[in-house]
Amino acid sequence: MKSDARKLKDIMTIAEERGLFRGARTKVMRGRMPEALVSKAKARTGIKSDTELLEVALANLAVADDYPEWLLSQRGTISGDVDLEF
Image 1 (cartoon, helix red, strand yellow):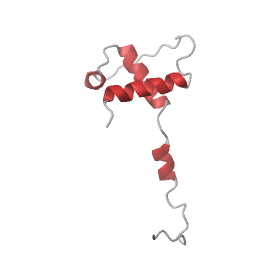
Image 2 (tube, one colour):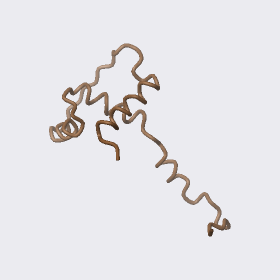
Image 3 (cartoon, rainbow, N blue to C red):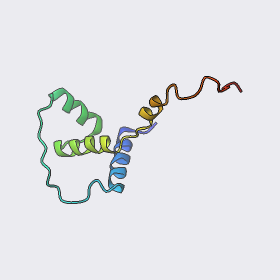
Image 4 (spheres, helix red, strand yellow):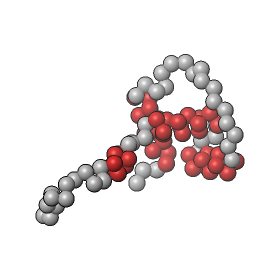
């Protein structure tokens, strides 16, 4: 099983490869978050900076694998006539 640090590195690498970090950093985002949420996320990731934590969270959403949703969308698409016995 991958460590949290390794998963985060992989997420950031994929985001970089997809060009998501190209261009000037001009977008400013602000939000009020529950302290417990921020503290737990920082503890789990080892990230100290609010900006870096937000960047990792957004990258995670941007590069997320859609396979689970696709798989669930396939429910009921195989005809009942198909023999699945081996």
